[in-house]
Length: 438
Image (cartoon, rainbow, N blue to C red; front, side, top):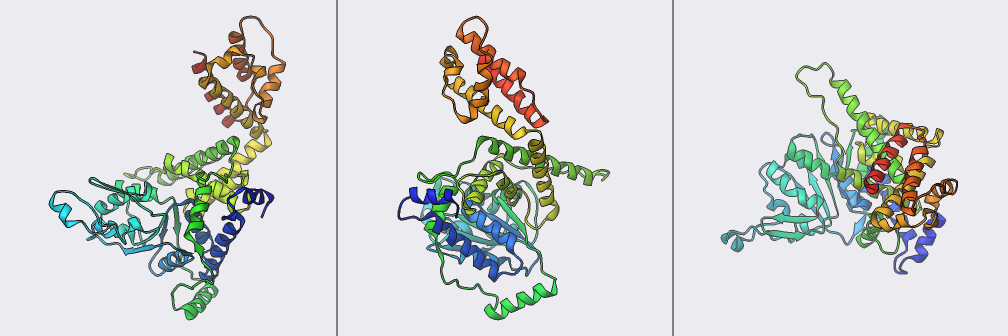
């Protein structure tokens, strides 16, 4: 592992070895990959889901091994309970939350006895999830997202970490759209028709008769929980850093991709009578949670700092694995922005403007800073360019407050953006500055 990871290991609690924990996860991922033929991308995506504490939806025709995949992945961990269910139209929420407390029901209160239910299990597998009725699916929303059972007056925290659901088809309405948004990771499991791949699958079947293979060693769920806390920024000892300019770049890529997908949809539907253009939508919740995947990618690659190339891996969230046209559209958005910002020195301009934004945030929080010479403010690497410009611009008359306002406005006025993305950021900062100076 890299020096970054070694430094993090040495600073962590002695009972937890970060390097060993990551190696155990990678070993488990490799074990599953060896067990299941031609499923490398989905397996990698599934372990990203586990590390980020999110859910995975598998779509395929019947007999493509979705259940085996989920069971083999969950079988790599110990000290975690697994809830399994086959969804059907007749089921009610108590199938997932536990039977109703009859005595309380007589008093008009809906309370579930949750022992052994999805609420009390760390892992869940829901087979044919869209066979469930909309009433039940709606009841599942808070459990999948807020990790809580909220039914009537009952509000109970759930221990559910990751749910893998499978489906042979998608049905789209306002309820199922909300359910789909709770499954941050999505994949299509393609049937293998290549004779050599079918031969390898047959070999595995002869060895294990379609059941999971027991590993020599499993990963404790506690280890997964600790890694999840690090990835999601909740760990007090180990942090994975994302620089401001990289965070901004990642969101630029996502916006570019969302626009590209909708442009493709409009082109596909052009001229279709009576057919809506369609809409590809990335919710703010999904976009925010994608930042956890950036930290996850860095960590599994032995780093505690996110790099620009890690943004490529956000395709595991924003595209459906094994749908090539989606992935290629995302990679095209990523590559296009990398080229635009690299050739034109845009990444450096991005750092400069974002550092200027930090300065504006400081002034907004403490307006008295305008009464002091800006050149005396603490310098940090991200503010250095502004401070260098400041040294050549200290002139004029008037009070300190007025001079600072002129300097702040002058910096943005003289800043020449190299591309449209930088121009847009500059305009936003100009608006923020106007709000502050009012």
